Image (cartoon, rainbow, N blue to C red):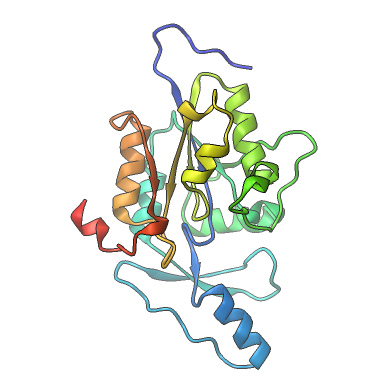
Length: 226
């Protein structure tokens, strides 16, 4: 367990999701499922300004697929200060080889982001976070809580399309002051350039607190107003 040095600024760590945060498929999950069931091509989501396609080998499929990302957001993550620890916290961790391949495709240096250190007896999984008290049993929640317990000198920012106010509420009270979060808007669920700028401000300590749940806002245009 690490202990803070008297008078020293707290260290910073970022836990980063992939699906519906950095990458999105060409269609919604339910549309992809229906299209496969009905043996037809899925109806795609609209491609928004600043999005670009990328062909990736996703963890749980045999064939490569087209996903979309925002290159400026990836560049912003690549340019975060080296003293900030960056961790993947994603279902892609169930297939480390494909996560490594994805990181290379996105142009993120091999050591720039590492898989989050999992607590003993905890394994990465594919199931998403439940929005109820069972969340505390989820492997992602357990990982972030364990990290905060064992790194008392560190504030952590959790960036994930499934993370919001309820996560902070369920965390142990003594850990809550050091947990920050940012949740992309659920109807599109990609980080925007404005989100990336906020993350950078938090990483450099210009922004002391970052707790923002955009799930209740249909405001992708928010980036233009920030």
